[in-house]
Amino acid sequence: MRDGDVVVIGGGYAGVRLAKRLDSVARVTLVDRKEVFFHRIASLRAGVRPEWSVTPFIPYDRLLRNGRVAVGKAVRIDTTERQVVLATGERLPYDVVVIATGADYPEPARFTGTTTDEAVKSFAGHQQKIAAAGHVLVVGGGPSGVELAAEVRLARPGARVTLAHSGPALLHSTGVERVGRRARAWLESHDVEVRLDSFMSPGNDFGTYRDAHGTVIEADLSFWATGTTPNTLWLRLGGHGDWLNPAGHVKVDRTLRVAGRLDVFAVGDVNDATELKITPAALAQADLAAWNIRTYLNSSGKHRKEPRMYRPIHRTPLIVPFGPADGLTLLPVPGGESAVLGGRTSVLAKAKTLMTPYMRRQLGYTAA
Image (cartoon, rainbow, N blue to C red; front, side, top):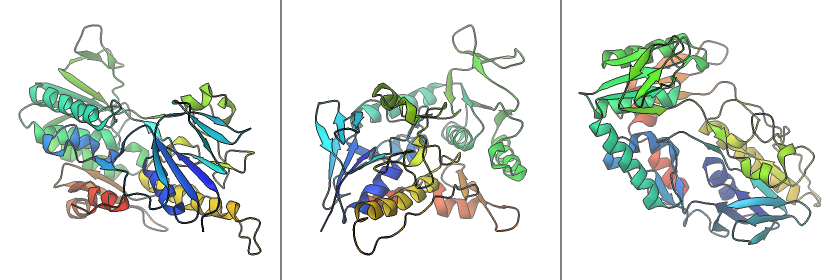
């Protein structure tokens, strides 16, 4: 028996996980503007290599056995009528609503357009530009910037590739200097120019870029891997700007509820529960929120359970691929320094397949 209507807004990693967890205990509707799940982890390689162009797209049609997926754009949460309003005018009643709209990433790690065909064409455009470029500039020395610079270098061994980072070391947000040194060593050994302490901005002339010291770099093509923006403008426009912090993230309490509302949750990149906006954190939040939603829906029963509290993840394994055959893994060790593992572990865990078989299984498809 399924009790309660749960509307999950956003079909990314957190939304898919939570919808699947609740499918057997509630009437679940997953709302997403895309017709397919976008496996963002595979998107950087898809933007570089033609044979990966369709890999990031996995249909939603096998995700839910009992619930449904509604393709559309949520524009407002009507808390008075307890309905989610779609751009089409359709209204979805809810007992619980979950905001899981994630964040917007720079290209090529973005679903461009509204259909799979449009997104595939966007990847093809990036591939063609990379194939023709004499000099590719990647801005941002975090995990995405390092991974993209490596992918471009392996795809274009004859081109000039520059990675510019505003910080003093690559991957400096990890707090582990060895990780940054190893990433830099790999890149420089493959003839990628690494520029640190280089805050870049577009130059005065087309195809030029200027750092904070006034140094001008000319490049045929640039990619900016400099952070993400939470997808919450629709909430502000829909009258819920008070739910957001100054950075645009949804403010949640330790149960992952929007403060003051028992029936509104927010999970994943969209909330302010943790600064680590990574997939493991999103999945952990989805699992905890699923428990708390079940607890809320069954709160009138004799065997009432208590909600669980989320503990932000401060240390988690980090895998940065250097193409499909190399990479590095940062593995936290309890009570000690993090271990830095090399290519074999990174290839098996992520670099070769970019976790595509795992996500296909999560959506009800075979791994291949």
